Length: 305
Image (cartoon, rainbow, N blue to C red):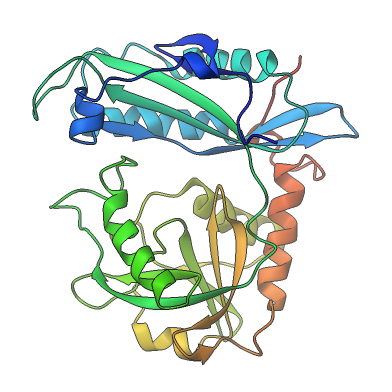
């Protein structure tokens, strides 16, 4: 079965998947002038409803990324983007868990500083859960990009080359993923997800000023820890060696959801299995995102109304 559905959005309009074309001379292709988002939609058999998780927050971040990338002429509002997303999902008759990729990118034949015209694309993909696997991570020899070079808070295609280099190295070395350090040697994130650890029973994550993406999933977990479990997440700098003595380590992101980590470098995390706090927050996150928990109803956008 193909990973994609029959229709996608190109130039803001619904088109058959096979008809989507983008010229190699566009700044989006030549220079990576593309910003994008990743969203999850969860199908509830009980409700016969498809819920998109934290849709407004993702669309807001997409527009913010476009602004920081200097794109001009983006006239879409958050409500416009939600309506186009609803049109896409309904046209494809989606009745299963899916991953959604909206993007804004510079088209035409402009040179490096080109800022317009900007096109809207959106595609929906079938995707299996990553969280069913425990990851073995390495510490990368590649440093994380920083705010004064190419800001990690912009979710743009060009930023991912930094993490891509680190992932290629780690996978070639036999690992499943990689944690990146900043130029001062502090932990930042995994190229595809944010990072949490547990020490002395306290969940800890790196602050948003640590050259990380301002992750919506990370923000969700911080709130869920506090409001559902009475645990305050420490947001602070994390040293490399703390990873080797942590009781638990896990990753979080739209695609990865909550994914446990079994080892970092050659150090086993805890006893090598999913820890109790990781298990607890993963179950809570999945219950909220699937609509099985009444709290945080505002985080779920129903598609079929």
